[in-house]
Length: 310
Image (cartoon, rainbow, N blue to C red; front, side, top):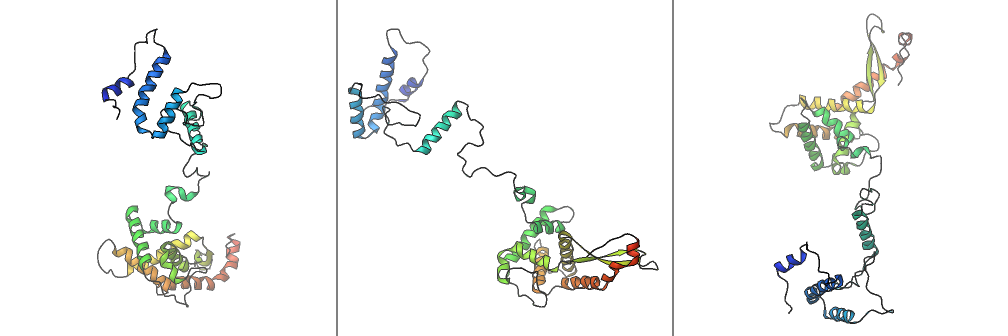
């Protein structure tokens, strides 16, 4: 077994010589000596077949028919002395060329350079990738309505408990007399998606109109009640406020940080099953709108120049 170099010999071979080589000693002799040292340290680690091939390459002189081994840009390391033959794939060759370009400062900050693991995102970025809009629109809106005294983290914790309660609850029993919003999923699928569970409950009891009063237009100082349609965000705000009013009027079942969230979740389940009193408020608003729809064509309202359409 050949002797190995010690640490002192390794450091001495890696150190930078400040003195120039003597004139009588050529550069080729130094390279040959360094090659012999490298061969003596690495030949023991190579298979016997590779050692015999290297020995034949060193003893056989180069002729016009044989060409000396070269280190090409494609990464062919099979002809370098002291290295085993390596098969370089096109991917490795492309990576080596990119590294060489980066080393020379050609493409240091090229964002279009290939090699990204997941690829670059398409611009412009979608709105859901923004950290302020990472939640569902209904969940974010309901969380802001749950917030008290500016404590958003507490409201988010309550909303997480509400969604967890809806996810772990059994499928609701729907009431045919109080149908949900058209296009809702089956009752057995609602606990699988608590966000959709919450959305279906809020949109089902959300009123379609609101009553607006115009003072003095009904005669005798009375206000003229006129039905007016409202947008989706305002409809959801009204519906969730009704749910919170019913929850606050019910007696508490105990104390703890989970009591309020569980009461809200139970009321949402009651809304889907048709047992909540929120349905009565929605029905009352729609009845008032139907009774006062004739006020849309009131002469006093037209003379004042107020146009309200439904």
